Image 1 (spheres, one colour):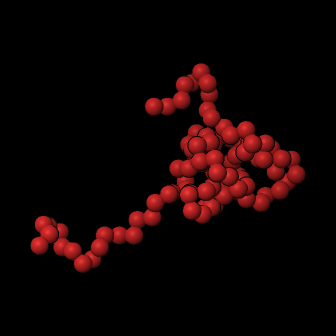
Image 2: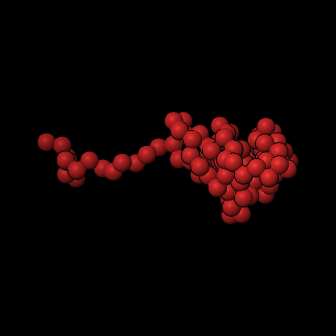
Image 3: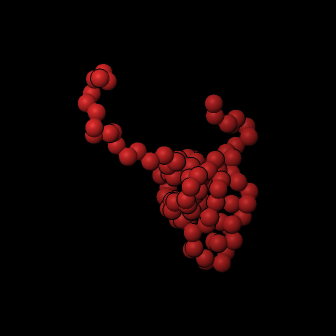
Amino acid sequence: MTRSAKKGPYVDEKLYHKVQNAEATGNRQPIKTWARSCTIVPEFVGFTFMVHNGKVFQKVFVTEDMVGHKLGEFSPTRMFRGHTAGRSSGAQR
């Protein structure tokens, strides 16, 4: 279920202030955050975020195409390492 349109998008207040401070000072260092549920707003475009995936921080550079999505969508939490090579497709023996 999506968030109510009346409420508007969820933007983490602390993160938004960090972006505003970085823009005012011209600082382009990556901004570290745990706020995976934060919606990307147009003010975030051009900034690099270090989004925590539960284990490590992953760099996410925000572009115009990402506006409206969540930060967590671009920092996957699971690593697919492939299917095991030892088993054949079919029933176990």
